[in-house]
Amino acid sequence: MSINDLPAIMGTVLIVAGLALVGVSTWSRADGSEKTTQAGALIIVVGAFLLGLSIFASHGK
Image (cartoon, rainbow, N blue to C red; front, side, top):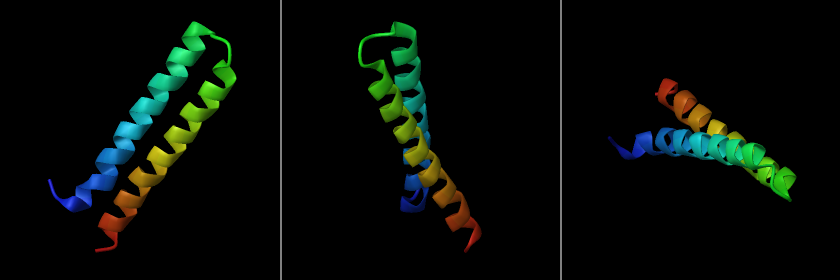
């Protein structure tokens, strides 16, 4: 593992955390779950961006 693997690892962790957050907020149907779902979706998007960045950066070398 090197420093170049860090965006891929962070991206994967953020995607899993975002999916867990959306799943829990959908399952519990708690008050304010819409904002929690939006926050989870934003976390997934940031994670996907980091994962995509790491894939394209590794192909650029």
